[in-house]
Image (tube, rainbow, N blue to C red; front, side):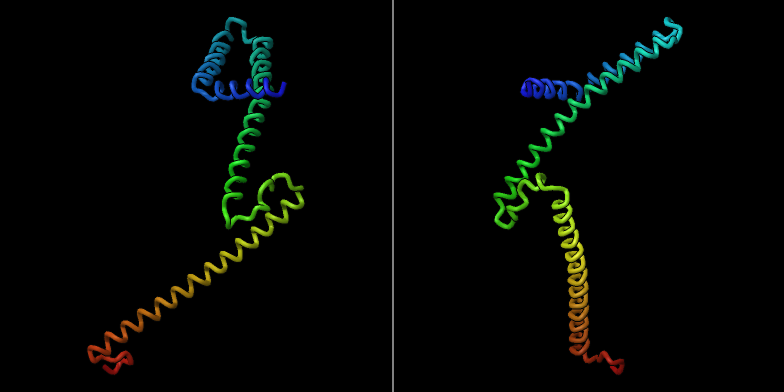
Length: 156
């Protein structure tokens, strides 16, 4: 049963994601609207479109959820393979999606702390590089002035 639904969901997903599906749905709405005067815009006429769209929406929720679950699982497997293959990566990150919510929160908090530390370090490194460059430029200017017999103390 599960395999049959998966095949149907994949087929439906491919079909519903095409421009033809939109054009068909739009055509149905136009046809429904055009028949309004014929049915005197009755409650039954309105109920037809409301019921039809509700049923289609309800069923599409399951198709979309199936597609999303499949895509998510594929992404997780690909990421797990990258983690496994990378020597620098932590293998503990594989199957992280199966951890309880409280453990996921702890991991997320750790990464946020790591990011703040990295931002702080980046800022400090940028300041140090900037100061080192300024000192080097000042030294080169002083050397140039000295070579030309000028002083940097304003007496040259």
